[in-house]
Length: 272
Image 1 (cartoon, one colour):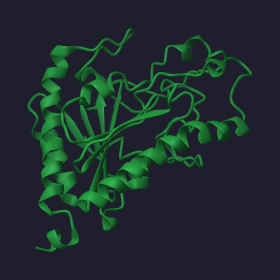
Image 2 (tube, helix red, strand yellow):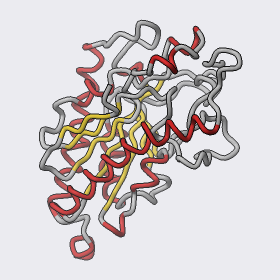
Image 3 (spheres, helix red, strand yellow):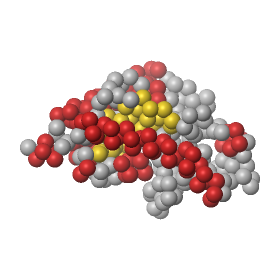
Image 4 (cartoon, helix red, strand yellow):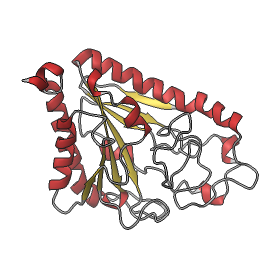
């Protein structure tokens, strides 16, 4: 199984999709317990949700499940949300706090490092290469990191999650116009709730690549899965819901593309 796929486009937008994969190598799968085998924390159908929304976008998608290693966690194991419950670089529990490994089969530190080298590092090497390519071509690159999650997870957050959860690490990872464009669409989408830098402020990927002063901008979109699918097994895609959601995502991406191509995000364009 290939670790990732790159669908290369000519535009200024790169879609990162680190959690849509469901591949678990056989040797690892044999050590996962019955709960873990359900893969409940997958960003189900995330590739399909964004497919075709922006024809010139580059897409970098991981095929490796987050229980093998989480491609959106700091490879050094540093927590993104100190003081809050979260999962680790190689999760020991699911999002509900339940064990995912058979007793005594939790990965060792050496194994975690091996997985980082095999799965985490190649995905990010590809993502960085594409961002640098896009930056070289357009003078600016925007990473739109695509995520989704169940709406109700008391272990991680209180209450029902809004549909659109936009994260920019409190504005640090992108030009203000990018944050305004995305949050503007989300907040004005009729029938859809939204929050900016709420429970999800942008994962390691967004924070690592978001360097606006260098022309690299990053923004995370975490979507509550009730907006496009069933949130219980077998996790079915719901075309009726997705058809209402996808136009708003398309508008977000179109606006970001227009911003990037207008020169408004460059130092010269921003000062005019």
